[in-house]
Length: 270
Ligand SMILES: C[S@@+](CC[C@H](N)C(=O)[O-])C[C@H]1O[C@@H](n2cnc3c(N)ncnc32)[C@H](O)[C@@H]1O
Image (cartoon, rainbow, N blue to C red; front, side, top):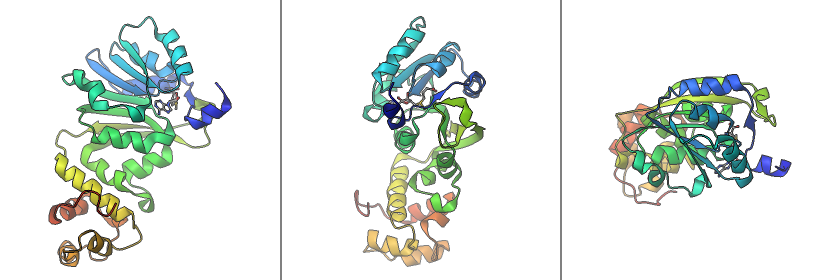
């Protein structure tokens, strides 16, 4: 594997067995589970997942790495490896035949795709049970904890309506080869059984995208452009949000706001 491709596809491999085993323990695996692993690399984590007896579906974009994983995992009849680009994958289609099983996502993600992958995972129709993910610390803090406030965005707005963050654990840079230049954390997410219904979630996503596109402006100013026929100021005054910017809104504020606003034309304001 060349140094160039390593940087391009986020190939920093976990080499620390204790951290790998900790990830597996967080996933609370049993033989009834179906695990999706995105970016199997050479199969270091995949092997430990497979030993639990759960069925493991592994996706890897790099055919050379996948060859190594196949060589390592050839003896497991509960491991199914595919050479796919995760961004071209239909998660609903891939996992639909497991809809009655406990579906879990366990991955050391390619960090450069974290936003795209998490967005797809949250918006697909798969009935996820939990996710245990290795991600960049800064990404985890802004996306799952909403800190710092100035880094919040549409993804951090929808997260609390879909998952509960059960914990975040730091991982030293020395746990990877090659060593990354950024800090990493393991994050455990449990998917809520009572989720926001899909039309409301789509509306929240579109309005959050619209408001964060002009994040320095007050919510009322941006809404006026997205809903020219409306007087958002009246709604905002009623909600006590007349001076707020998108990053100031709490989950309860977002919920009140989208319930008070009419449906948005697809594409408007984006
Ligand atoms: C951080 S490494 C993790 C490797 C291994 N699972 C481990 O824990 O050591 C991320 C992996 O994602 C793979 N990857 C990068 N982009 C991808 C994509 N678009 N689709 C699928 N896999 C991808 C990389 O080739 C790499 O093997």
